[in-house]
Structures are given as C-alpha cells and as structure tokens.
Image (cartoon, rainbow, N blue to C red; front, side, top):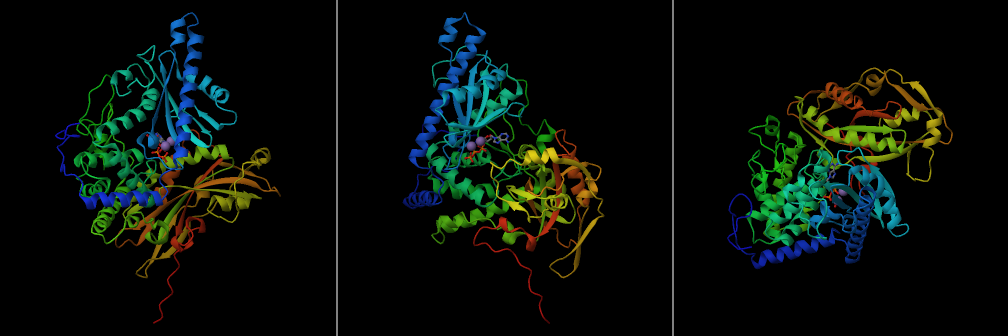
Length: 581
Ligand code: 3AT
Ligand code: MN
Ligand code: MN
C-alpha cells in the first residue's frame, strides 16, 4: 500500500513513524502481555492448525457425500466436490489466548443444505477424526445461529455452516473470497448470519494498515477490557468484535504508529468521541440484498444506539445495540482512566501492568447490589434458562437506570455458576433465594438429577408477604429498599420441588450481580416495579418451564456478598465501626 493511502473514511491524523521511545514502549507492552499469559505456546498453535486441517478434510468429505446422494450420476460434480473452512472470532483476528476456542465456518456449494449439515456432520466428525479426539459434541439446530459445538483434542470448537447458493462447484482451496457480496444471494437469514462473522472479521483485517500492529494493540485493549469487567456483548458491554473495530479505527488514523502508541491514542480518541457519531471503518456499501443497513436517518430504532460501532461488511449493522446508559457511563469512566494511565506510562511514571489492574466491582464500587438468580433442577434445563435470562439482564439494567433514585445500574460482565445439593423443599427454597449453604463441586459423573425428576412432586410454594429492608445510607438516614418477594410473584406457578431425599439432589444456579449507584439525594429505593416487570418478561418466555426453572431477584449489601466473588487477596467490604462520640 502506498503511504498516501487513506485508511477508512477520513485522512489520517498522523503518519509519523514510531520514535525510539515508542518502539521501546511497544517492546515493554509485548513483554507485559506475555507475562499476563495472553499468548499460547507455539506447540498449542500448531495443534490448532492441525485441527483446522482435519476439519477441512472432513468438510470436503461431507460435501462429497451429499453430492453422491443428491446427484449420483454426476461424476464431475462428485469428483470436484469440496467445501471451504473459514474462521472468525479471536483465532481469525490473531488475538487468541490459551483458553480460546476456534470459531469455524464451513461453507459448501448450493446443493448442500443446513439439514444435510446437521444430519451428516456430527457423525462424520466422530468417524473421521482420530479416535477419541472429538468429545462433548452438541448440536443446536434451531438457534439464531445454528451451531455444532465440540472439543477437539481439548480445544473448544464452535462450528457453523452456510451454503453459497450461487456456486454449484467451489474453486480450489484458498480461492473462495467470502467478501464478495454476490455470495449472499439466495440465502436465508440464518445462513446470512453464519457468513457474517467471517466476512466482518476479514474485512476488519483488510481495513487496517498494519495487521501485526493492530493485533498487539487489540490484545492489550482486550486484556484491559476483561480486567475492568467491561467486556461482554450479551450483558451490554462491547464484545471482542466491537473492541476490534474500535482499535482498527485508531490504527487507520495513525497508520504508521507502533502498538504502544495505538493503545494510548485509543484512549485519547475514544474518551472524547462525539457519540452518537458512529465508529466505522469504511463508507456504507450497497449490496444485492433487500435488507436494511444501519441508518439512523431512516430508521428511528437506529437513532437510539448510544455508542454505534458499525460492522464493515455488507449489510452493515450496529454491533453495540446492547449498550445502555449505565454501561456507557462505565465504559466512559474506564476510557478516562485508561487515558490517564497511558499518559503516565508514556511519561515513565507507571508501567503497563498498571493499566491491567483488576476492577473493584465487588470490593469497593458499590454498596448495594441486585442478584439475579436463575435456578434449574437439571443441568440441561439450566443451560437454556440461564442463557435466556443472561440475555435479558440488560433489559433489567435499562429498567433500573430509568428509576429516579438510580444513577447507574452496572451489570457485572459474567454470571456466577454454582451447583448445590439439597435434601428437601426448604433447602431448595433457600438456594433459590440466594443461600450458598448447600454448595457442592460439580462432578458430571454423579447423575442424580434423574432421581430427582422421578421423585418430583408438585408443591405449591407458600405465599410470602412483601419484603422490606431498611438500609443505612452514608449520611446516616434510613433508606428503604423494597422488593416483592419471589414467592409473591411466582405463587401461581406450580413448582416441582423434589420430596425429601436423604442423598440430596443437585440444583443449578447462575447469578448475575448488578451494582447500583444511587442518584444524589436518593432516599427511597423501591424497585418492585422494575423487578416484577423483569420477572414477567422472563416467565413469559415460551421455553420457561415452571417445573424446572425459577428466577429470583434479591438485594445484597456489599458486606453480605458471597465469599466466592472475591479472589485470594481481595477483602470483602465490612461494616464501618460506629463512630463513638
Ligand atoms: P475468545 O478468544 O474465544 O474468548 P472471541 O472474540 O473469539 O474470544 P467468541 O468465541 O465468544 O469470542 O465469539 C466469536 C464471535 O462469535 C463473536 C461474535 O461475532 C460471535 N458470537 C459469539 N457469541 C455469540 C452469540 N451469543 N450470538 C451471536 N454471535 C455470537
Ligand atoms: Mn472465540
Ligand atoms: Mn466462540
């Protein structure tokens, strides 16, 4: 690329080459990222390459089988039948770490359908992969993005599929360019969504001036965002793709800069970004589909996006529609902290490790929390139910932040999964309402959930009256914090609670914590409306199973947080000693 090239939608801010100090700082950044274990070993990466080569071989055989079945007379078609395997996600971006999965897309010619994929691929995997390589296989055919998940030599694989309806025969391996918009013709929504990840990721890489600079800077931003608990698309923070697009935009503005410089410019630029002006890596494309492309001037709903970051592949979409006022305020605060710290790092007053210091969500940030507790009586049911509720936590956050007494409702970026063993109805009730008195280690071997189902009896939960708790606020005044109890709302549901079982039965919970920051002068905090609206929303879900699932929302004071949210060395907040006069 020539040096005058414009990357993105504006000319660069600076085309300066790195100074020796910036090169040195980049070296120190790389060392710190190594120390923080964000890179895996070369041997591990070799293993990933081998897995991908195997998947390509299996994909080819899959396409060949379908060709044989559908056009047994067509020898040329069968002879040249092949699929093409792509990646997306952190592996494709080159920012994967030791625990990363491989996000993989299988594409195939037009005669291969999604039904064929789910019919043949799982068994072909078992058949063609080395003995014992493939484990924990699950196929989710009716998902938003249909997927086959499994482990291959211990590496998690997310495997999705799309055919290319305009091609009956694929070119030789490595020659299919998915960024061609013509390949989108004739596909259904699920196929389009499946192609989107790879198309977006590839486009991001195409639109940055120097990929290795981009990668190292993105690794730093990802680690920072994870440590600060502001990384989680589903909860209402940016996810990996969004952070990648933001870093890529900064790379475009400083095409020759070193990674350390990109990281500090990232904070300087993003902290003063004039939202809702979107972050975008290129101008909007026109394409062959009759679908909408993000445009707040035409679509009212697009104009509500608070921090729009627009994907670069047609049809361009806003990847940050999940962000709420609260999460935006937290992100803003963290960007300011990052700008401040990187200034000091550049001045030699601090080191890179100071940027990556862990958040203080549980230890210092809030006095009041809500705990959103999902409970299920089987592991399988819990996956579905807790996944659904997790995807709705940001809706609760939206409700809470509209409350006059709430300044910010900050969701923690991940849920806490726990397994409990209870002996009777009362213990079940306690766990559902947040007790950690019956925690056990989860070992898969112990399959007593079956016993429980067989012994399940229909029990109507007791009615409870409204809970009311008085909490002392800073100024010494008493503040009431009210919520209707869960039993009140769910009393009409018939609950299947196991009868007394001396061995105990397992129940599964996932808890999402939302930290509250009260508005100035807030005296009373009655959240029953918000809580009940949220519970109604969740229990109206068509897959909600009152006999298996339960949802409870509790308030928790910082001094009553469970021990397992603290890491060794962290101190649980304690009640300040009363001051003697
Ligand atoms: P890791 O290194 O794997 O932790 P990543 O960025 O690859 O980081 P994921 O594997 O979770 O993260 O996701 C890869 C992409 O898959 C990101 C997004 O485009 C898509 N994706 C992930 N989860 C969902 C989801 N629940 N719904 C839709 N798309 C998703
Ligand atoms: Mn991934
Ligand atoms: Mn994944």
